[in-house]
Image 1 (cartoon, rainbow, N blue to C red):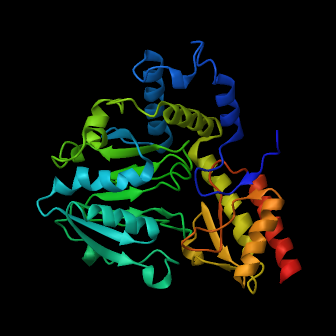
Image 2: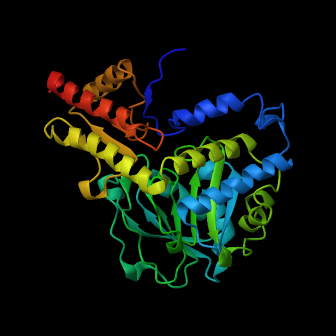
Image 3: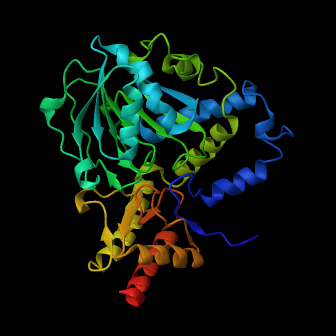
Length: 364
């Protein structure tokens, strides 16, 4: 087998090695059944137990209050861009939703919502290429809005909401796709918190929404059954043939997080990794330019540039040769992006920091 690289891709992302090894060990024989997990029915008792364990682990790790339900669906985080307005826009008569535009994906979410009701952009950092989380004037939060949507961590540009806004009774919806399970979060601040699984929770093709119970049962009549939060919550996400492999992998990842010390330990590890990389970039202020303002920096996605596109390309190519894989920035944004999700070990961040120093010494 070729060597394992440190995989900095933005998603599907690097997985914890113990999770991959366990999946490999169980691939042909899931829990003594003599069949793979991808060969058994989603309604088999053995698989239903997997779903119940995923729900229980999420509740434990995220300290989800009792008045919230969990809904897993196909499609990943982008599917949730439609699911949120379809399920929530009609919870108040105005059918109005508020969106904070802090990056590419928050813009896509707002575009989807505009198909189903009135969408108002209440804050934006687009004018400075999304290099910070925009200030949100409380006066812009209209009381008759069905919800206020934020993207808690912006994958492409590397910014994060370190604290969440007070919405004065308007349900807060958070897209936590690129930081779910990377730090403790107060779920009670949200009406809905959702995430695609492919960065910190498992493999692609699955989304998880944590929904406050009073927001269920008010979906638009046109909402398909398979993306209706109420239906999914009632059926424990087994309203149809679920993405059984992705749910199984989510269970393995959640078990790994729990045995690693829970979210407090995971957050401490992520802070250490981010500090290693940001400190290395900051040691060379004339050579590297991190994109995000220091006070808004993401712990999951580190975005930066060198003085030229040619040096950027050399950084990516030489890093790849050193086993630092997928450092190229998003195709719409350029530069470099190092995604240091939960599955990235501290050793990987340290290797990247050393390469950042060494590249600047040679090229600066």
